[in-house]
Image (cartoon, rainbow, N blue to C red; front, side):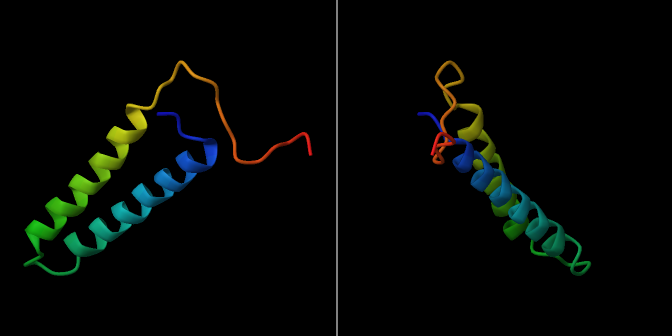
Length: 68
């Protein structure tokens, strides 16, 4: 599997959005939903895992052709 640069941007932005959601849920009130926080954190780790398992020995691809 080889992510394009745009795929990486999308996944990193998704991780950021999930982290912001986690922050809001965790700090919303003293009796926060711990299960929801754990699920959001697991989503973030899952996305990070997919990025980490990307084949780093292959060509860096882009959906945009700069030669046009």
